[in-house]
Length: 247
Ligand SMILES: [Zn+2]
Image (cartoon, rainbow, N blue to C red):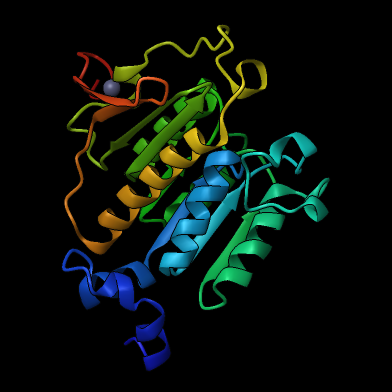
């Protein structure tokens, strides 16, 4: 049960009929794995921590760099050279000391046993990586573990988000993007990124996660493409590819 302090803390979202007390309790009991603690991961994690998600696990092998700070707003200048997963954990706990945050300073997808352990108790996984190979690894591992996940990507003035259910009845990430070839190099290191574009996608991922965790239905298998230059969102429904994830 939520005590008076927690009722006050989360009062503005408990007021929403879509959340209410039951949804807030669900959010408090929930566990979320955030893969990647860069632009997307740090912003998603801030929203989830603020909203009271009870258990957050952060995975990232990188350290904070000066060139991260224009968009990875969870970090401070004093965090430079510190492991991102640890620095982000510190920020989240200073925002909300009621929650539990665990950090793993490694790459998700490199150690099958450890990856399976990370996935065992989570309700949903947030993809906050920056390359296709990592996204395909998340697709495979979450499918094996029968967990839903929310992919997110942003580069230049473009962003993408899609949610995949536990069953993958709507299709999977491989149905959407069969190739793991990342040679076009559409990453922010090469192409650039505007901070708020990352923020839009991160906020959207956090919103989808909170709706799911509170018990609201989610639209699975719909790729939403945000074009900041044109100020528009296009939608593409994923179609299950024969012989893909169901084979
Ligand atoms: Zn598939």
